[in-house]
Length: 71
Image (cartoon, rainbow, N blue to C red; front, side):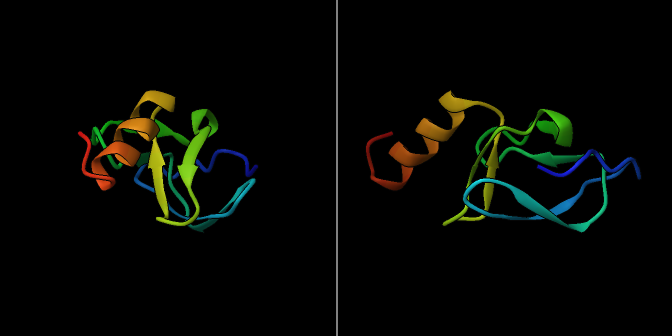
């Protein structure tokens, strides 16, 4: 995993299966479900397929259910 990049703004990342690549430095990304800011050093959940970050496992599951039409 990449170290936190402290430019203060929102980062742009490319999400891989086990890690991510910083395309634009920043301090955080926004959860695709809640819009909440997630500091890069706390980012643990994302979808490489959808290229989306999630604040936690519950948000990841919520997104999966939304996309399957069950939420």
